[in-house]
Image 1: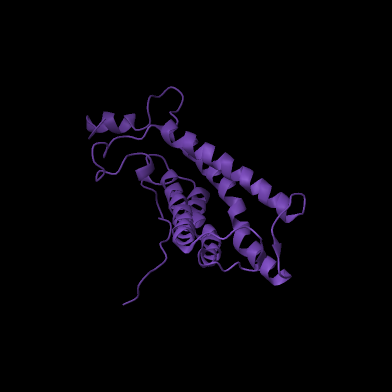
Image 2: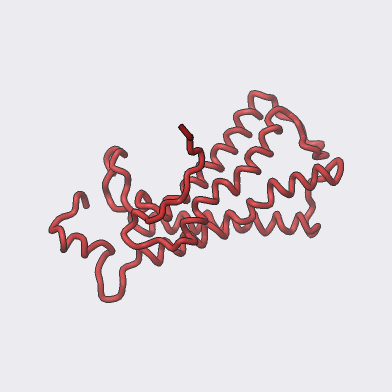
Length: 198
């Protein structure tokens, strides 16, 4: 029996309006793009500098381990959260969530945090690019091999902000009401005569 460890993007979406294929692919690729940087950062929790020449004071292990591991887990969770921009649970709160489960998600409640987060991440990307080309001061490395490893692992983070902004735009376009129509999904209410929860 084969075990499928990689979850592929669905062939069709469970959203009210179709999601562009590029958006599905980008959303599902994002956690994989960020994984190398999350793994690269883990040795720092145990005071292994990955070739960096840094004289900063070292935090005790009881602080460094939860901080570094927590940062990596948070990064991946935020990347997984962006999948909500292309799936139905980004439009209707999953039913298993207490109190608000089954309710429609107001589009601005999703678009505004995604745009703000995307802009912040894009700023980090610009700063990182300026550091790599030498315009801004960066961390020195013992040799070129360590620096090359760092660049290979960290550089995909530069795509995070622009991808989130593109996904937020696609979400906004998909959820806005068409001219002359009311709320998205109103035709569903007209056809069925009811909606499960407001």
